[in-house]
Image (cartoon, rainbow, N blue to C red):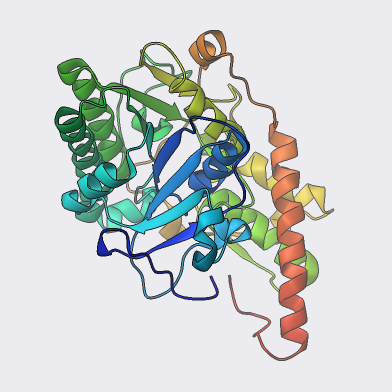
Length: 373
């Protein structure tokens, strides 16, 4: 962002983003937590194309972390043109959640915010649990109390679940598969899942859980294994890097494209009745297979560059996640559009272009050639 964002609404700061709304009335309003993340950015684009007005909650930081949505930024001085606005709040601050619900009056609430890195959750388990599980509870309670106070019972709520909740339960995993979480992150997601079910059953809230299997994109964080690999491929191909340090190469995951998965989130909230759905490609690949596809795409052998580092092994490993998305296909009419090979190529292509831009900086002396992303 070019400048600090300000907003006089309720005395809080915010920014206004994105272009003209299509001629449509009444316009639906969506509230998204985690809007600056991978899924939040794709969901925002999707909803804006549907004609929604989108509000996102972001945490206050000394540095802007809005890179994934900067391409749809509109200066706050032109806020009258905007259909996307950002507001400062936090899942650890219940009062801010209730305040923005009362101010924005959303039709749909998407809870995508989380400390979502599995390995990091072992390092900061208390924080992970507070944001992921208790944060979801705070937001659900804010929705419940808002409905009670205003009578706006049509509000629909989406909770972002994770295939990590299945943990060591053998694949294929569907909505009836028992959870066996193997990390603080996964345990926290299980709690958030059951909080959502409880609020649906106890208070009649239209609340859905999306149990999403791994979904990637060029917007994936660089400390996640898929993006770590494709970033390294780009830098190695361009000559900025030589080695890539990884952990367990035999872990197997069901990898899809994040842009496809946000459509499933939206579809869940368009149904007559709330329910829980597994979203997956139904195909599983190991980290080694991902390496083969990524390095092979640019004519390299991963074996010449990958070094196994035991520091990247988890205290409790999840061996194989493979979803059964039959329910999502039959009830929602959803199916993935981007396959595994296409996804890998998409990510590598983007990261080669990024590496080329980095090389320009290296050649100009503005960046160390060995500086890791």
